[in-house]
Length: 187
Image 1 (cartoon, one colour):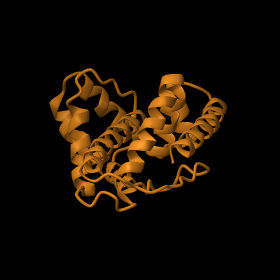
Image 2 (spheres, one colour; image 1 turned 90 degrees about the horizontal axis):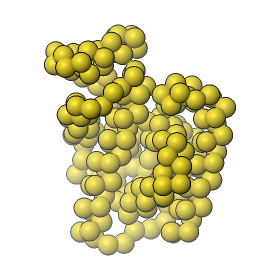
Image 3 (spheres, helix red, strand yellow; image 1 turned 45 degrees about the horizontal axis):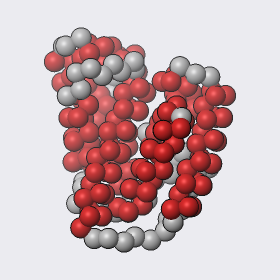
């Protein structure tokens, strides 16, 4: 595994059109992407998706974004987490369309280091709540994506967003409160 600075250099080379850099990038971030995918799939609600399939689908969507500008490894992983979340939401919507229903669920917003153990309907509800949050405050939604979904630390989120760690903590608390309320009213 390369150092974070080497990964950042590969991302810069890929951004400048170096296709070999893209080829060298995947092995360097693959294990971290697998950890993210495993975290998403930990609840077992996606029997038709494997960790490997989710990683590959997300990676392909990332490298096909010609206009993406990843500042560093943490920024790239934030985008990867967002891509995985969108893939799972699309999968959940398709699954939910096939069978209506679903129970209630609880998310522990006090920890960013938890698996997302949602089934199809619950993933859709969470996505709708996150979209509503994003409509009110895009930065709060981004903090949730990076902390909860990507599992980035407060410091990493601050670096990606270019804000202070105190702002990240404040935004994280506001976002959790909003999402908790939004999910309770839909349950």
